[in-house]
Image (cartoon, helix red, strand yellow):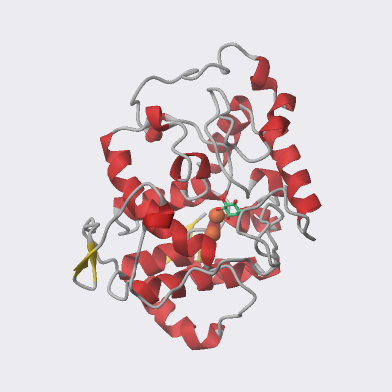
Length: 304
Ligand SMILES: O[C@H]1[C@H](O)[C@@H](O)[C@H](O)[C@@H](O)[C@H]1O
Ligand SMILES: [Fe+2]
Ligand SMILES: [Fe+2]
């Protein structure tokens, strides 16, 4: 059974109007979730230079990621994984698969990914109790990380996690550890290393190839399975790691009007995705029934 959800309206939060802007710092909510000043390691969030136990692992991750994520690589992976012929699995089963993985690209979290999914969804639920589509989006947004698992090809971390960026045009300076792109074959290729590369002004993100990983994969899974998720949810899933755009406004020239609308919801979502990362564990068994009921509303099984 599936239940259609209409495209949500942006400005409603518990009946109160709310200001949505390009700057996440300006987003003020009066719900229960408060943004912490420092992460679990005592650093500010997303500080890739800070001396912490995560720094070296994260830097090496981005070195590999930036060297290997080329236009040809992405085309090949999208073709292969777009077939979705690997296996069929329920959402909750795939969530449990994430129990064993720690994301090597993340300076703010070294907990298993299942924690992060529930932390995100629960934080959203506090501020947006009525937007159940957004709770579910929080729950599944990183589910594409199952690509790390042997059942899904056991891809290396550099092909699954980390921030994403367009391939086929110049790598913007605001990408984390930009210097490592010098090792990418596209860096020297005149077809791909100009501002627009193979794209054009306002062509729409749907026509842009993004570096391959859990975002685009989960988007393909959700889209091809014809889930009842609204387009804002699909946009969030697909671009939540695209920090150069949603945090810094880079690559804006590739967006069309629909992207600009959806980006507002991504700004809302990002606050919870990023700042809910903590060492405080969620009681999985306690919240499971609620999420199972949500899953049943929108999706039953996924072919992935
Ligand atoms: O390290 C993190 C992690 O991999 C997230 O899942 C991704 O969405 C972020 O963009 C990235 O910075
Ligand atoms: Fe993610
Ligand atoms: Fe996430």
